[in-house]
Image (cartoon, rainbow, N blue to C red; front, side):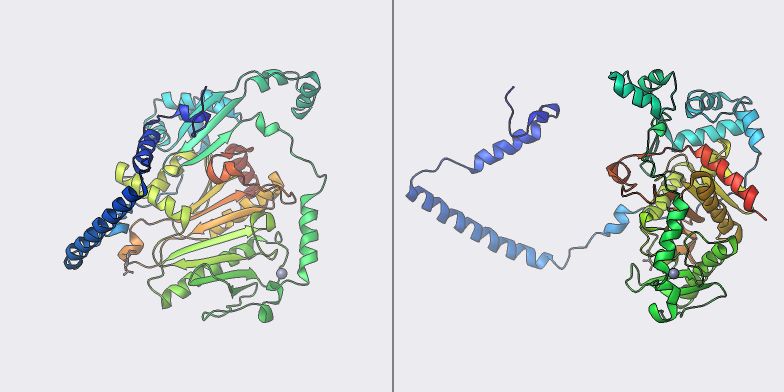
Length: 487
Ligand SMILES: *[C@@H]1O[C@H](CO)[C@@H](O)[C@H](O)[C@H]1NC(C)=O
Ligand SMILES: [Zn+2]
C-alpha cells in the first residue's frame, strides 16, 4: 500500500477535502518561467491588488454606517421561559414502585437490573410506571455491550483469579464482561459501569485513610491562615461576619467580582464537621449571597464550591466553602443544566428537575429528607455522585448533604470530595423567574486521597466516567447514614 501524506488512516475517511486542497496547492505553485516573465506577473499582480484595495475603500466606507451588528448571544443562546414549578416530593414508597413497576422484584446486581428489571418496567401496565419509563427513555440512553474471550497465559490467569477473589468461574466472568453505558444526551454525560472491572485491583497502601488525613491536619494547623483569620486573611466590604462557629473571609485572588469564603472559625480538621457546623457554614454562605444582592441587585446567580483535601483540588486543609455571585448566569455545567432544562421544557413542557426525581425515584435512587431530596445519580461526572435538590436552600437540604458526607466516610472510606452548588436566582425580577434552578448541589468522590494518581484522566475530562460503585450502593449508604446520624 502506498501511504500519502495523510498516513495509513487517511483511507478510512472520504478523501474529497484532501483532494480539493491538493488541487488548490498545485494551482498556486505554477512551474516558474524566466525571470522576466516572473517580474511581469508580479507587477501586474501588485497593480491589480492596488485597484482592488482602492475599490474596497471606496465601496466599504459609506456602508460602514449602515451595518447592524447581529445580536450574537441571542442567536446562540436560547431565551429562558418560566418553567412549571419543581416538585421534589416523592409520591410513593419504594415498595409501591417495586410492586407496580417491577413485578415485585428487586436486585442489587447491575446486570440483572439493566438486563431484566428495566425491561420489566418497560412492560408495566400501571400508567404511572409507564409515564416514568417514558421520561427515563427521553433522558437516558442505555447501551449494553459484551466483551469477548481473552487468551491468558496460566501465570497471568492465576493472578486474575486472585483479583476476582479466587472465583472458580473467573474465566466466564472475564470472557463475557457486561459493560453498561449510560448516556445523558442533554448534558452529553457518559457513564460506564462494568461489575467485573469494579473488582480490578487498586494498590493497597495498607494505610488508614482517616489517620492519614488527621496527620495532614495536625501538620498544617500551625501555619494555617484560616485558623488565624484575623491577621492572615482579607475581608471585603461586607466584613468578616463572625458567628459563634463560622467566619467569612474574602478570597484574595478572585474568580468573580464578588467572591468570598466561609470557614469554621475554630475547626481546622477537614472531617471534623458536625451537622450543626456544616449547616451553619452553608447558612452563612447563603446569607452572604443575600447581603451582596442587597447592595448589587443585578448580581443574582449564587454559585458555591466546596472541595475537601488536596486530592479534590482544595488549596487549604482547613474546610472552606467558596461563594461567587454572578450577574449574567450560573457557571459552566450548572448553566449547562439550566440550558438542558430549557431545551427539555421547550420540547416536553415539563420541569426537567421534577423528571429527574421521578426517574430516580422509580429506580429506588432517591432519598428524601424533610423538604429536600437526594438523587443517587445514574450518570453524572464522577463516582458516588449525588445530586441534592430542594425548592430553596433549607436546613433539610444542608442536613442531607451532611448525611451524604457521613455515607462517603463510613461506607466508602472516602474523605476526598468535591461539591458544586447553584442556589435559585435571588429576587423576584423576571430574570430571576425565568429558567429557575431549584437549590441544587452535586457531590462526587475524588478517588484515593493519599495516591499520587489523579482521579481524572482523559476518560473523565473528555470522554466517559467509569464508576466502580453503583448508584444503588450510594443510595443505601445515605439511608444508613440518616438512620445513624439523624438525632
Ligand atoms: C436581565 O438579563 C439580561 C440578560 O443577561 C440583561 O441584559 C438585563 O440587563 C437583565 N436585567 C436586569 C434588570 O438585570
Ligand atoms: Zn486551619
